[in-house]
Amino acid sequence: MSAKILVVEDDEQLQLLVKTILTKAGYEFFSALTGEEGLEKLLTHKPDLVILDNMMPRKTGEQVFDEVMKYDKYESARSIPFVMLTAKQMRKAQIDSLLEQGMAAHLMKPFGQRELLNVIQNILTTHDIQLRRKHLLKTVRKAKDFLSNLIESIPDALFIVSLEGRIDFYNGGHKDVLGYEFSELRDGPISDLFGTDSPGFAELVESLGEQNKKTNIDITLHGNCGKEFPFSMSIAKLCNRNDGIVGYILIGTDVSEIKRLEAELIEKEKLQLFYETAVAINHEVNNPLAPILGNIQLLLEDKNKLDEETCNRLESIGRNALRIRQITEKLSRIKRPVHTVYLGDTKMVDIRESD
Image (cartoon, rainbow, N blue to C red; front, side, top):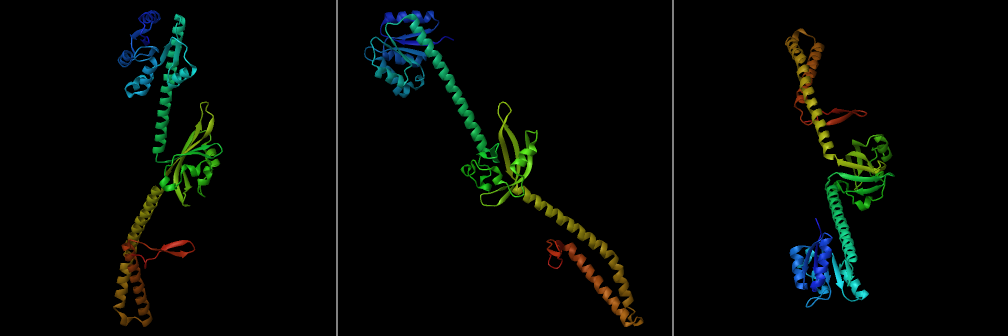
């Protein structure tokens, strides 16, 4: 598509000359005889370039350009390049002022056909490059903002670490747990965050080997409060375009609640095993106790046929058998076992204190 050029010039002969040059070169030509008309066509025709005569009646080219730069009405037109035509030598300060305001170029009258076309072509090419640069910059900024927002929205703790193991970036994930600001960690060794039982940074890197990443590494991190928190950590190589390693990305998830639930589940499983064992003991022990107690009772019914020592022994056996029954019955009823130390580090259930 050919570029649209608006020429604002009160000299109709010069307009005709410029029209001939531009249309022959393949440009789409529009014209205006006054500054007021030029401002109207600027909005209605949306040209790609404006050639603006400075010396015009009622409203000069500088006044037209000043209005475009000043009023919101013409905001959409401010990105259009303007070329100022002058019939007399303009002061350098005046030219500099126009260029500072956004004027693309100025051209002295009279000018040749080649000079006019060269100025137009150079301006359009430069303007196109500038537009593409602006679009690219806008795209880059948008991508950067998106990436920054994405990283900041990740709930996990994300660290970018140099080859030497120093923290280049921290997104603030799990800040409520760890309690650090990035400024507190910047350039510090990542290994300073690792708990006493955790592998060191060098060990983590070594564990990667030829792999690009490794996941689900159990590690503890020091919080700002001095407490250690369990994390599930992933480490990945950070590479440049040539696949050279320039650093590492570490992403950690706080698993304190998971660990708590796991411990709670283990306790429940232990408790369930205890209940099942207690019921089994109660059942298996009471079965042989029943005939023992029954036979003792039968023997003691004929006390007069037994000597005193034998009676005492039978009564002792009966009392202990009853005690065994009471212990097994209590075992099967315990809901909250209380542990006590038996020997050394060995623990046992304190039946008396349990309920």
